[in-house]
Image (cartoon, rainbow, N blue to C red; front, side, top):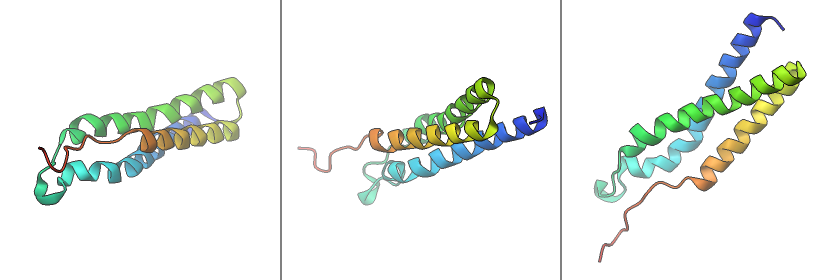
Length: 108
């Protein structure tokens, strides 16, 4: 594998990881952006705090594992498989663990 191919593959891993993390995260954050009933529970901090963190994590975590596996084994197929597995595990963890803050419907 040439250096140019390694670089392009790493860029592709980062872009696909970031895009898939954002696509999995967006439906969870929709409640905070739209605000629910009559916009009463709108919290736009998900756009300037959580959005960059999810995008960066989705790009950097699979890329780091791809690079480490490629350096250790020198087999690009195995490195791609590890990157996809780590991205899938990270997205699963994100969607099962992260819950946006929601103000109670009725404050009493």
